[in-house]
Picture (cartoon, rainbow, N blue to C red):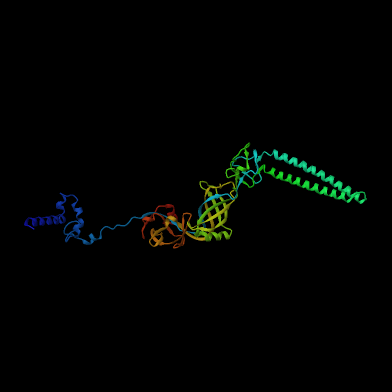
Amino acid sequence: MGKKGLTLLVAAVGGVAGAIYWPSAVEGAFPGWTVRTASIRAWMPGGDANGPGKADRSAASRGPNIQRPPVPVDIDIVQRGPMPLRIDSVGTVQPINTTSIRTRIDAQIDKIFVADGARVNAGDVLVKLDSRQIEAQIRQVEATVAKDQTVIEQTNRDLARATELLSKNSGTQLNVDNAQTAVSAAKATIAADQASLDNLKVQLSWYTLSAPISGRVSAFTSKAGNIIRTADNTSTGIIATIVQTSPIYVAFSVPQIVLSPLREAVDRNEGEVRATPQGSERSAVGKIAMVDNTIDPTTGTITIRAILDNAGDVLWPGQLCNVRITLKTDPDIVSVPRSATQSGQNGNFVYVVENGVAHIRKVKVGRFQDGRDIILDGLTGGETIVSDGALLLAEGSRIDVRNSGQTKKEGI
């Protein structure tokens, strides 16, 4: 380095040192210089944050005393007491019975007695077909049966006379035998005609279509005056359909993990099922009717069918509904709000509040129900915990309670 470069270096070092040790000399040219160099002066030999000759390294090394402000949170109390074991699912309403109304003869519809979609009871007449022809045939055969009855009476009289003459040796055995044969033939004739009459009466019943079950009828595909034929009785030839609506089924699936308590509830004849149609506040209550015999391996669920009274037609066939199954009531359960439970590398934990300070408490979580976690271990009930705002907390953090009502209650 040349003499010129060395001279410049010495001048620069001297200028920096002078600016640090005697900041007032450059404060006029560079306002704020004294403040910016205070920390540097404190560490220089013989230096001081306030100027030369007043060094106090211990004061400089202490630095400012910074403390984190309290974290605003909501708190809650750990609950302990009886809690029902519930399972929630989504189900589909299914009718117990569905019957199609068809015709067994070719005829014209004379009259329809119920409106489309009406509720009917078993035995109610739905449709009356034109039966004038079959009624005329019945009257004709009834007349034949009446005639046959007179023939039987005549042959019985002939048999009685022939028998009397034979007893007086005035007749022959042949006449008696012939009279007996005539009686037998007349009885056979009247039996055949009576069978024909019974057959026609059965056919006459086909002209009146009644409801075989109670339920709600669909829209009629044919109206009065239309001709219906037995050849039309395909899937599109149904006159109407009746769907049983009370009682009714609701089918739904539950995870296989609850199969054991579910079967226990069925064995005890317990297990209330409450079905609420989506978008409705009304519910129907029933019980479990059937547990399927196979678990679906693709979903790990099992199909359940419940039977409900469905008074007032709360449930409608094919409708989606929210299903809640109450299997039993556990007498002593510890629970916390779902938002209070946190997850970490070492598992689940909650923040327990003691004297305004949050402390980490490891917990073992069981099932989740009604917005709450069931705690199996780690809490005993009655503790004050952080229910909201825990993401900003650490072990030993001070808290500022936001839900003042809870604060007053617990005196925190």
